[in-house]
Structures are given as structure tokens and as C-alpha cells.
Amino acid sequence: MNPQHPTEGTSVTHRRYVPHSHAHYGGNLVDGAYGLGLFGDVATELCVRTDGDEGLFAGYTGVQFLAPLHAGDVVEATATLVRVGTRSRGMEFEARVVCRAAPDRGPSAADVLDPPIVITRATGTVVIPPKQ
Image (cartoon, rainbow, N blue to C red; front, side):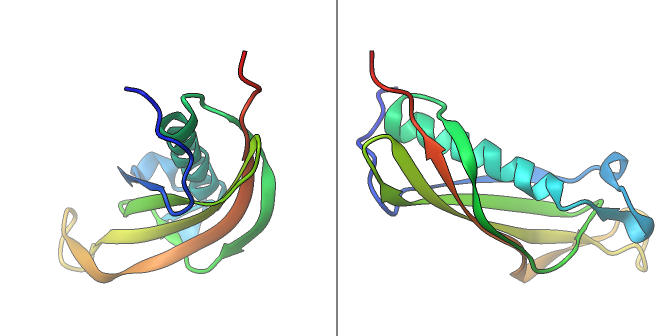
């Protein structure tokens, strides 16, 4: 696939089931770093699609943890391109829980959340290596 030209507003979304092996705290809570890892993954795909290169994550300029992530959740993460520099790419990220386990109804019961719960928002910068 040939990369597109980097265009503000372009976005990529990934979905993933959060296995119980990722619970890190009481109450089946998953640490906030899990969501940041998802943001790295969607940023990588966004760079591949727009620049034909994975890019290098330079850093976050802001991160907000808004709600908990639990083992058994289905979470989606979206990266949206909001700034295109010569080699830098500004991105906004959002992670949402779209399905959540409902253990009170049974060991494998779960619900689709409508609307999803926004759990994390962030902004960051990715750098694309110079063309050779």
C-alpha cells in the first residue's frame, strides 16, 4: 500500500479485548500504561498510512486518565492527526471502553456500552525520519 499525504483529520482506531492477565490492581483494574501502549500502536499505524514509515514517538504533551479500565473490557483507541509539520506530526488520542464485563449476571456476561466510556485522552508528537 502506498502512503497517503499526511492530512489533518486522518484517524486510525484499534479495538482490543483486555485479558484478565493484565489486571494489575484490586478490583480487576488495569494500569494506565496499558492505554498509553494502545496509543503508541495507533500512532504507528497512522504514520505508516500517512508517511510510509512507523515514525518515532517523541513524547506526550498531555495525558488525562478519566475513568478506570478493567480486565474483561473491550477498549478502542483512536489517534487523529491534528498537526502536520515538515517531519513532526501532532496527534490527539482517545481511549474508550465499548464493552464491559458484567460478573453480577454470570462469569462470562458482558454489556455493550452505549455510549462508550472515555477513559483516557492525550496529545503527543511523532517524528518521521528524513526521506533518503
